[in-house]
Structure formats: C-alpha cells, structure tokens
Amino acid sequence: MARLLIVEDDKNLGLSLKDRLESEGYQVEWAETLQAAGRLVQSPPDLIILDWMLPDGQGQDFLVNLRKQSNKVPVIFLTARVELVDKILGLELGANDYMTKPFEPRELLARVRVQLRDQGAHQKLSESNLIRVGALSIDTIKHKVVLGGVDVDLVKKEFELLVLLAESPEKVFSRDEILNKVWGYDVYPTTRTVDTHIMMLRQKLRDELIETVRSVGYRLKVIE
Image 1: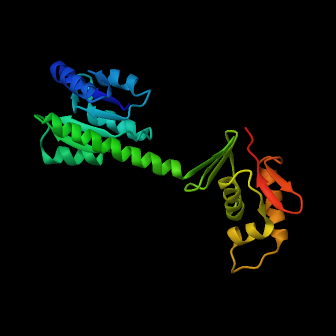
Image 2: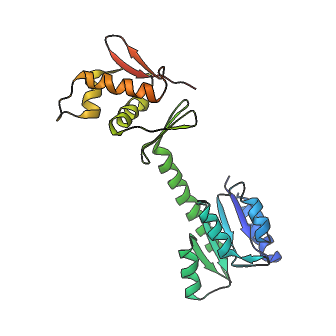
Image 3: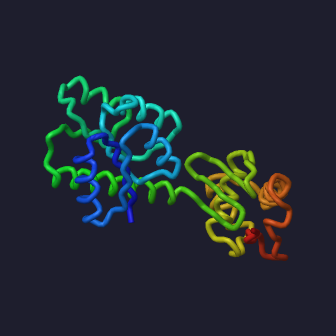
C-alpha cells in the first residue's frame, strides 16, 4: 500500500483529500505545517502533495531541502498560485507535477497514480542494476562494489570478472569460459590471466569468497 503525505494548512481541504485518497486504498498522513511535514518525511512517503504557502514557510523551500538531501520522492504541488512563472519555478525546483486550485479530485487521483507508477518503474530499473550475493553488493551502473558494508575498489577487468561470477553464484566457470566472456574472442590472453585476476580479487575481497574447483575453474560462494 502506497503511503502519501499531504502538506496542506486548509483543514477542510486537508481532511477532504485525506478521506478521498484513503477511500482509494492509500495510506495517508496529513501535515498542516512544514515543521510537521519535516518530521513525517523522516520515514519517506511514496508521494507528497504539497501546498505552496504554509503557516511556517513556503512549500518551495521545503522541496528544495528535500532535493538537497537527495530525496527523490515524487512531489505534486497543489496550490492557488496560477501564474505560469510559479508553475515553471515549481517544476524547476524539483516538483514532479503542478496542479492549481480549484481542482478536480479525479484529475489529482490520476496524477497521483501516474507518479506512483513512474516511481515504481524507476525503482525496478534501479534494482535491476544491482547484484546481491550474501554480503556482496554490486551496482553495475555506478561500477560500485560493497562487501560487508565496506566499499571495494576494482579495476575494469576485475569488476567484469566479479560480475560474471556473481550473476551465477555457486556456478563453476572454466578458465576458457571466463576468458571468452570477460576478455572476448578477439583478444588472446592465457588462462594465467584469469588466475592472476582471481588472485587480485581475493586480495581485495575475501580469500574464501571465490573458490577454486580443481581441474575445472572458479565459482563465487555465498558468504553472509
């Protein structure tokens, strides 16, 4: 169930929005001030519906602070500010959408669904770039390796070799198979190249993480 946060000081509107969104199956929290909203975002919601003018400040400043903290939660401005310059400013500051009051609740619901759908697709894409094997985590986009909470620096071929092993943990890869998949058919290193890179990986990771299977090759073990 998606968790939504409404930041709105108009009690009638806030209560009406909360009831309507809850009737659609969402878990909804409502803050009447930016201070209260700041406490609620400590446990990040899936989406924020944000007014521009609040008793203790402006929604745009709240949004800027969120983005400075690398908080990418979708934000929909819902405000009486109808000037084009305000819409542009809100979007440029990091809002995902902008609606003006008065508004049609069905349109707001549709926009909420779009943002949640897009956010879900983004999360799935991000997760597809991650490989997790026990205590080992590999981000194939950021070229980042973490083992037991500690960052590990690898050069290009070390990284590619580790990714190959981690994509099929416990599978035994022969030296020839590793050569073909990591170095390619158009270069001609020897199997000694594989042994050397395995040795370097063991030195940078844990010696027991990569197991030698006698007369066959290597495999990545699952270690918590």
